Image (cartoon, rainbow, N blue to C red; front, top):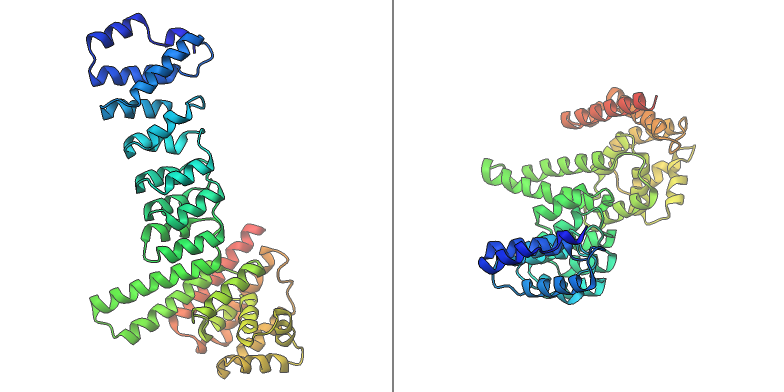
Length: 376
């Protein structure tokens, strides 16, 4: 940028003749665009800084807004002026808070303690948000700021932070939707979100259609379990799957129908983790019992976990089928196993399931077939 972009004699004459807010706002734009440019002389840079300092104190909001908007990402902006701007009203502060590179994490954390929710939203929307700043936002930020943080892919948000956000704002739609869209959402938090949605739907059904609470509760339980298993899918990493199963049990949501529905849908890993959790034994020990060639181990752990006896033949058939598959090798292999299991369930064990479950198995089989075609 050449020095001709800085204030000309005509600009000065106009400002003297018309010291209106509009003229001062135009001046703010010109000086902001020029400040920090290499072509400015030392005297011009000193004059520009004096003008910026004065404009940052201007009584007219539109002048301060113009200044903030056009100097928001200037790395040469002096820190004292930047701090004055971000302690202004949100319309002035937000652009600088979101874009200025002059702030340290300590600055941002200190600001978070005393600014408004709109200011916090701006900090949450920065291109990069460190783990330290994200932690303070999650623990002390207002609901809109936490939702903005969780929607920001440049924010260092850990699974532990996601859990704290869900604890603080368990009824927040904005926070729930942001979490649901997060690419690294752990399955156990997905389960909590699904549970919250189904509970809200249950209350709506009871109030609007006068459905008996017990019936509505059973409907939502089935919906929640099918939704969770569909969201989780087969092939989840063992640590994440173990974490999910443990969390489900802590919340009293690891019921027999969910475990057996997962198995009937071809998710053998979930079945193994669930039985290990229920029996409080290491996963490896549970797998040895489940896959005992003589079937006595499966029958023993199955009964110890209190699963309904009429489903045991189905479990035995699916575990037997697993011996012929290379599970965990590839997505295509898992899809082939899911297709084979759901076909077997629909053919030989359909009487164990209601119409909605059978439709769910059919959809799962169709998705497995599509996955195989994509892999091929």
